[in-house]
Each structure stands twice: as structure tokens, then as C-alpha cells.
Image (cartoon, rainbow, N blue to C red):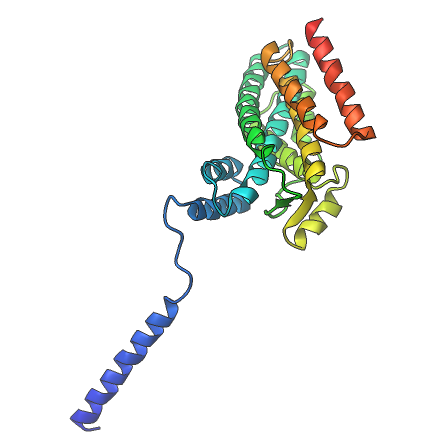
Length: 280
């Protein structure tokens, strides 16, 4: 090959390499850091990893402004915050029961009760704040724009062990927390999708893609969660009667926006019983 031919070959190789590089960079640009798109992507990534607190942090940033993701982020945020709160409430109940049975070393149990209820309190308040914003929107359908969560609707065996008063190791405590939170999110997702008692059916629906739920059905699920979280503030738990009253009243207000049904009547009866008990 002559010198001229070599030069031509080198130039052609450089042009080809440049074309390859350019073709690789013609895809959609990465979301700008700090933008709603960036945090929406972050929420999807943390959800896939099972990091629900990080998911909440990302979604809270998204819903601070009205943007293309807000309408999808708000229901997702309600489900994950409410589900986590549900899990921690259940976890606290098991540690409290175990502490009553374990007379030799109840301190470990009491500490975990305090930790779990503190986490539930924080999550319930975040849920209530976002629900107030959700109620302002009157969309016909609510889009559950996230994959079905990881976990099982059944309580992990370690929680039964703790509830029976068997002193847990740190590994047991970590496993119980993870399992309780995952279960809470799974159960809340099922209720939000309108099928609270059939996780397998809901999971199959989610496999088909984003799930649309009638606004009334989703609101009913959130009213149920609001009343469930109100129990956290009862006299024998966090003992915050004003907060209990607020949560119950918000649940009642949500029910008033729905057509009357057997389900709304039953929940309203439970709310009234909770308020009556708090006054006794």
C-alpha cells in the first residue's frame, strides 16, 4: 500500500470511528440533575431496588411542582408512604406483644416499639399531607404508574417469633422490619388497585402495564388508610388525641365525596367508633 493509500485509509477509519461515536450519542439525553424527570427516574430505580424511603424522597421532590410527572407521582407517593406506615404499625404491635410475654428482657422489645411507631408517625404525616393535595384533583381515573412491589402479603415468620416473646437478634429485627414494610406496601397497593384480598390477581394486572383505577375506588382506599393510621395516635400508643381526631375527620371528609355504599357505611361506622372510644 502506498503512502497516499495509507493516509486515505487512516482518514476513512477516523471518519468511521466518529460516525460510530455520534450514533451512540443520538439517544435521548439524560434528565438534568434536580429536574422532575431526574427524580422520577430516581424513584423508579430506588423502587426496583426495594429502597422505599429513597423512593419517597424522590417522589416528594417531583410533587412539589406541577409538571408532567405530578399526576402519576402523587398516587404512587400515597401508596408507598401509607404502605410503609402500615408495615411499621404492624411491626410495633408484634414487638409490643412480644415485650409483654418476655419478662426477662423486655427493654429490647420496647425500644423497637418506639422506633417503629416513630417511623410510622413520620410516614403517616407525610401521607396525610400529600392526600390533601390529591383531593384537589378530580381526575376520572387514577394511574398507578409503577411496577407491583417486591414482597409477600403474608407476615414473615420472624414477626410471629417476635410476637411470641422470643428475644430477637439484630438479624431478626432487620428481617422483621424489611418484611413488615414490604408486606404493608403490597397490601396497600392491592387495596389501591381495588382488590385488597387477592395479591396474585393484582400482580397479574400490573404485569400488563400501568393500572388505571376509578378515582372513587382509589379515594376509598386512601380513606381506609387514613383511618388505619389514626389508630397510631390512640391513648395506648402515641397518645395524641388531636392528631387521631384530625385523621378520622379527614377520612370522613373523603368518604363524603364518594357515592354512599355498603363499604362507605362500614368504614364510617368504624371511624365513629374510633372517635367515641377516644373520648371515653
